[in-house]
Image (cartoon, rainbow, N blue to C red; front, side):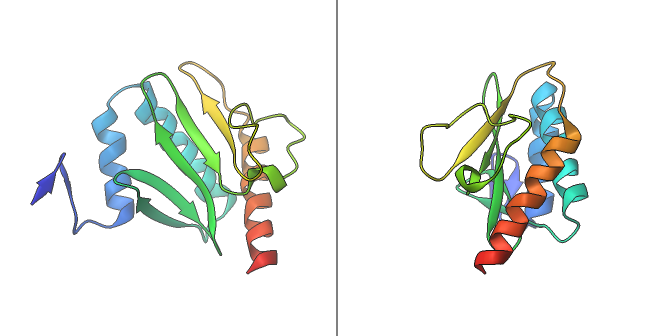
Length: 130
């Protein structure tokens, strides 16, 4: 049975592909680029599909999610509060004790090297706690 164009039997990577294609605007392009950067930063990353439609990237635990909203693509780092962020990428969910997020808006440039460094730091943190 199909649910919003996505089948339960599809792999998480296929579901993420379908979500990106279904967005068909700047958010799909942004999510696709963020996904590529996560995979470039950690070739061993595992893609997952959770909470009825949220792309998730993991390696020895959750690294981050890629949520799409009307005016923002939000990348939430599960243990972001424990990560050093010298480039100041985190701009959302700053009050919590655990998570930190980056809100990307239409037309914004991504500091690709800083983002990959953050992903690698999250993987290192996960490995140290595994």
